[in-house]
Image (cartoon, rainbow, N blue to C red; front, side, top):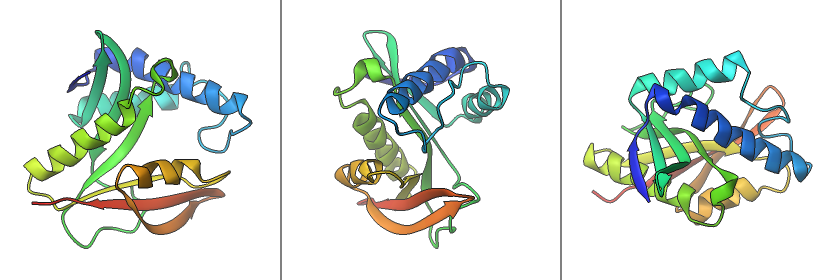
Length: 167
């Protein structure tokens, strides 16, 4: 697996990753995280991913030259409690369901932790959907994150998590 900087040329691939994740979640009756509509064709989603690609914080995991996952790092979202120390924030993480079970998400989170350490930052934070059965929160905990606090955006239940980084 290779991790490279994402560009605006990756926008269709990242939209397709989200589409595959939404389809998979919808098939399980789990539409609370990202809804049930594909990201492709949604101007707001395209604009969001374009911003990520232009921000310099988007990385793509390639398997055999095919985009398999995406992570975006940068400042924390405005809907979470600000950190009390310097941090790097995982703004987004998605993997293409065709590559499920290949540790793409874990590899991208490990890249984010290494990147934060290289920048001299002691903290990596992320937020995620905390509804339904809580499997997504448990996934982040299995990747070395600990719960900080729950929050809501409208009716959307979230969980803020953090990972302390050795310096």
